[in-house]
Image (cartoon, rainbow, N blue to C red):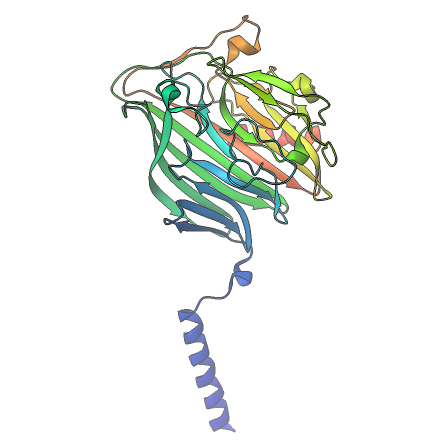
Length: 353
């Protein structure tokens, strides 16, 4: 009997040693945040347990790094597929609207916002490009994952106007998913001016289901006067509606200030809400909202002249070597549309973090 007991103990010890050499499968770590770097495909994928949440994507085939796709709990995609992975029935306007991005329409006279592969070569001299330059931190954890990256804001000549340092923090609370973005922009060898412009700053292009129903085509003009037609499409399954901290809803949210805005709808037969929270330390707080019914969901604290009808102006200037920091939070709810009281609490909490 003693011999058998000794053998059992010895066998158990060997098994434990083997387990230390070969980690448990993903399902045993399902509550953790994993960051998988894929240099060949120029992306870092973010997993919450077994589910893909989003990916930091930085190929030189697009004019700035983006988070794409962004998925709610259950693998429900809340971002538009076009132009990277077009889906049937979605809009194909504004090819520069990809997943989540952050840039601006007038930086020393250059348009970073509207730049895309659709811009003719003879017009590229008017546009700026943002290039990924490195990953400085990649931290996984049970409660959150942290990705820190650097980028250069480039003039068409190759001159670096601004260096960017961005920290993404990814986490989850039940079926609520969270992305914090803290971005510091530093002017390099000369003064950098962010001239008051409606095209900016912190943006997501939403899936078709989270747009408003549209009965007619619309025409929009960018900061260079180039028109884009947004076509009317089949409205089946389209259910989006904006709500703002200032009590506005729908189209009335555009061009108004607020500390948060929620975009609510039904995707894959499930209630989905996507929320952007502003932070009191941001320039231009509380931000104006560049929120369009066709799926552009953006916070723009710098375009005050356009949104206020000329009553306010903010031309942000950075002297050489000086910096400014923006901090925003994205909340992605699955299975509920949070109340205004819930979002006021979330906003207050974010303001204290």
